[in-house]
Amino acid sequence: MRRTYFCVLKQSIMVDVILGLQWGDEGKGKIVDYFAPKYDIIARFQGGPNAGHTLYVNGTKMVLHQIPSGIFHHDKINIIGNGVVLDPVTLKKECDAVATMGIDVKKNLFISERTNIIIPSHRALDKASELSKGEAKIGSTLKGIGPAYMDKTGRNALRVGDLLDKKFISKYIALRMKHQKILDSYNFNEDISEMESEFFECIEFLKTLNIINCEYFINEQIAQGKKVLAEGAQGSMLDIDFGTFPFVTSSNTISAGVCTGLGISPKQIGEVFGISKAYCTRVGSGPFPTELHDAKGEELRKIGSEFGATTGRPRRCGWIDLVALKYTCMINGVTQIIMTKADILDSFETLDLGVAYEMEGKQIDYVPFQLVGTPVSPVWKTMQGWNIDSTKMKNEAELPATMKSYIEFINTYLGVPVKYVSNGPGRDQIIHL
Image (cartoon, rainbow, N blue to C red):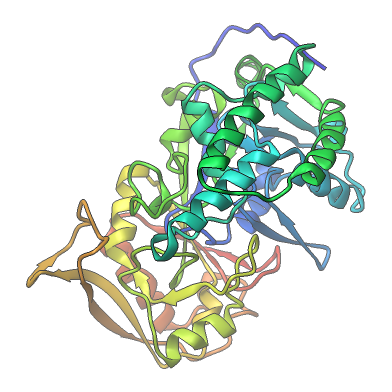
């Protein structure tokens, strides 16, 4: 249903942000779920079903691709903002899964009418484009994300608000025919009619949800004193502008994307919580300076169960990259860092931290314009591991001295404090420093 909202804005900071500082998969879902009780509204501001936020709810593993991670808190409003590209099929499956946990999505899930829609031919275009690149492929999840954002910037997109328009079918056909011409140029002949049948069934479901004018709605809530937690997808090093281009996603994953992705002003942004693993991972192709190609990298993957929540692909693993981390703290204005999966390092006797890059015979301590095509070697700082089971620890006093030293070195290097350490997948396995 369509609603219109009018409000007078107050001069207050009511929006905090949680986002990833690496190449995604930092554990944002659990962290948003942990912080959600402190907020009234949880809002996704960018990305699409290529995101996979994993949560454990009452011992049950749940992976959310589009629904905000605050959905399991019955009294919270959850918003999918206009900066997101929405796949109705994925959304319907998620809503069905969430409903089995006793959650009424028709009560607490709200979708911006300006949110762009992924249609079946977007998926086909994604696949055709990736296949055409051969060895130069970027490692797309083939969910139609890139083509959907291309239609957005090309001013051809269908938006959720269009579903309420009697001309929706004719608009769909026009876009579908445009896509077919491109698919023909790729000699792509796969039949997507079955995908279309499912798509239109899920469109009918989507129309039963709360479709809102998000920018008025969220600003009215803020004016009433409601607190908002903006939830990012992917990671800062995948940002379309500031990531390792062209091996990036198609949206702005950094804190600036909150304003354009929800319709709020910069003056309303408060805390920016940046999430980083205690080590580093990446899915798909692209530069990864601290990647390990040895037994230690495989051990990180095995202990950390490093396989993509969306694709199931093995993640590339390596030590923490402080050069990249300092860069993403800077461009996001990070105020606090949350370190996840610290327990994965429990069994390592020594730990390496990337503190600089060697490129073309020079040592640099910044992220250069181009990391693609130029050999990059990390400069390591080696530290003693804690070699102890950290998963049972409940407070800072219980942390071993070597773990504290590891964290303190990171604090000093970045100039931003690590304020939380996650030491396991459970909701209660997080230590406030």
